[in-house]
Image 1: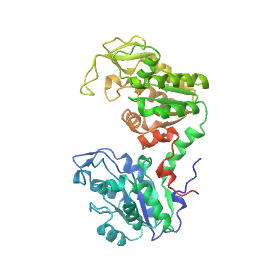
Image 2: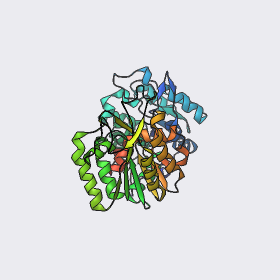
Image 3: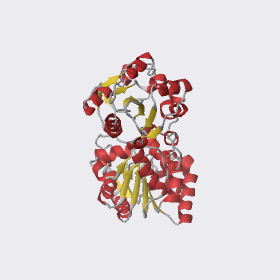
Image 4: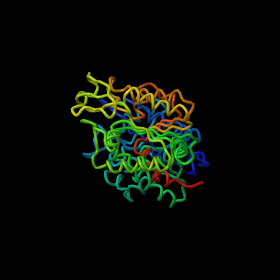
Amino acid sequence: MLNKKTVDDLKDLKGKKVLVRCDFNVPLKNGEITDETRINAALPTINKLIREGAKVILCSHLGKVKNGPNEGESLAPVAKRLSEKLGKEVVFVADYNVTGEAAAAAAAALEDGDVMLLQNTRFRGKEETKNGEEFSKELADLADDYVCDAFGSSHRAHASVEGVTKFISAKGGTNAVGYLMQKEIDFLGNAVENPVRPFVAILGGAKVADKLNVISNLLEKCDTLIIGGGMAYTFLKAQGKGVGQSLVDDTKLDYCKEMMEKAEKLGKKLLLPIDTVIAASFPDPIDGPIEISVVASDSIPDDKQGLDIGPKTAELFAEAVKSAKTVVWNGPMGVFENPTLAAGTIAVAKALAETEATTIIGGGDSAAAVNQLGFGDKMSHISTGGGASLEFLEGKELPGVVAADDK
């Protein structure tokens, strides 16, 4: 298991400047934050540092920032909301240069227990995303120690995630992970490397291509692999079944055959849908009314497409979860954004909510689905990183985790 230094291993913090990489990539609508999950997730680490008398310097990216720095992707709304949640002013450095003179001056003016937030790290463009040395060093120059608490960005070797750690080390500082990162490492890492069995993995979502290595890695680790969502139709077609107009990746048919053979060879159960909810076309708008019917998975008419797992499949999948001790779920079972096509995803969420097993939801759409459907508080752990949790489940090393000091 990964044994990294955590924020609890940082000693004598009073008066020390600590740079914390958070994941404040929150959804904004007209300048207002519409979902505060990521801000709330960062609070335990920030509060711990405040209590210990550290001078806290926060940084994060927000959005994709395709056309250079702009007010629409400024972290100003986050600073405002954070100030309210922490009950103290978070000094916001609005400078688009992120680490310029304004940032240095604000850092120098911090008192023990004060908090400041730098501007969106992506405003430095490729210097951030290509792990530029100069930007990495400028970030490190602001602080004595570094804490990475941005699991959602930990699979990217960016300056504020990975590059900065080299310069913190060079000046004798410590690179640690925050409470959120530690929780992700504990749950996801243990689920894959040391699961309590039976271990059931559920994969959904649209494309097989997104989950190639995940399927292969999980087959080696789990006892039962359940495949639903759009990706199931490529598997069904690989079995020689007609899938009508359903979403299929014809370039991955051989891969699906290989995986089914691998499951058989390893003595693992691989469950695919036995019935399917079909419609004439994809709903437009996505949550609009739609006419559906249910057919067996090998009887999808040529002019129809599958958009959710059917009731018999929902029962089959729920049954497989009942006896499990560990369940990892990544990807919805159908077009869950549409109330008519959410039944399969709801059935799986309900089965997970009712089991005694450790239930781990791998970020992204599955996290959104579980939260939207009201099952969030029934899960053992909901990952804050979609891409990062997928790479963790693939067995990949994440740059943001690797860069932290070992205990």
